[in-house]
Amino acid sequence: MSSLHRRHLAVSPEWLALYYRHPLEITHGEGRHVWDAEGNRYLDFFGGILTTMTAHALPEVTKAVSEQAGRIIHSSTLYLNRPMVELAERIATLSGIPEARVFFTTSGTEANDTALLLATTYRRSNQILAMRNSYHGRSFSAVSITGNNAWSPTSLSPLQTLYVHGGVRTRGPYAHLGDGEFIAACVADLEDLLGHTRTPAALIAEPIQGVGGFTSPPDGLYAAFREVLDRHGVLWISDEVQTGWGRSGEHFWGWQAHGQNGPPDIVTFAKGIGNGMSVGGVIARAEVMNCLDANSISTFGGSPVTMAAGLANLSYLLEHDLQGNARRVGGLLIERLRAIGAASEYVREVRGRGLMIGIELVKPGTDEANPEAAAAVLEAAREGGLLLGKGGGHDTSVLRIAPPLSLSIPEAEEGAGILAGALRSLG
Image (cartoon, rainbow, N blue to C red; front, side, top):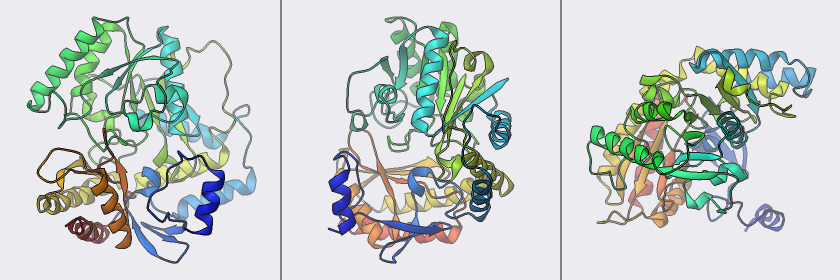
């Protein structure tokens, strides 16, 4: 055990998880690579949990941060803030929400917490619909709507939460149905659920479930849900903390795969927009955002430095068409990984879109989750110079792949080759 690991254990809570038997200290990065304290170089296929969206040490972002820090680091939302207004204007335009208003926070957890405050206040209801296998953050309210027991440490809650079918396509009671039948069954389940309860404030859903292992429903599910929700006056919150900014390749926002009946009432975002800086936020149509009847501020949300980083990062993303790169390189990577997975008895499914890919591992010859295999592949990939993530529903048995969106084809091939070797090491 390293000295730093011992010091970490002495001052940190036991539930603060670390990857690897011998945890990694990352000291610096460049592009799609990072280095540890021992000088080892790794291809980063997890990007700080989908946060390093464009590249490590992107010059345009580091320059913007440095220049802004040299002027003023902090002022709070009590004063006019030019970078915050400029970034809010760009996000409001990109959101697809009419008369959009934007509120900045410091994290996705805080963004979802704010969305829940807005929805429950606007609807005068503390009942929330959430998806099974979902994850929405670490706060008391976010934990209470998380449908993944590995990340929900308490059943105490300020909200009454009801869980809806549909977030996981290939497991559960409707897995055997075709896509159209699957959507119809989930809609019928939602209709039935609403017939047994008081009217909820909102449905919150990740278009592609992140911590849940990059699972998603067929396109159009949430559009079909929207027809039911609108009849009951229930808001739709799209949690885009992991799916936003073009990561899926096909769409800029994950909700756009379900946009036939219009945009969500509320969108939450975080992670990638700051490229590592602490940025989150909420987009909502004006009447929803403005429903609070008391004062509110965000001391650190929308700070000049993080907003400067977000502006530079968003500009780079759009100018270099990283969404298109995610579609092209991600499509090639998924096909390569599916070919690799077809040769392994441990791989149940390779799924995902763009540069948001999950590899679900099972015990050979069964449909049973295999968290031990996932942990072993994570270790073997690290030994080969590749960093991956983990996730999943009932058990953590999904390898999560989400590199920076500037990933090149040679880097994708390199990572796929290392992963193939790691899977072969299972025997």
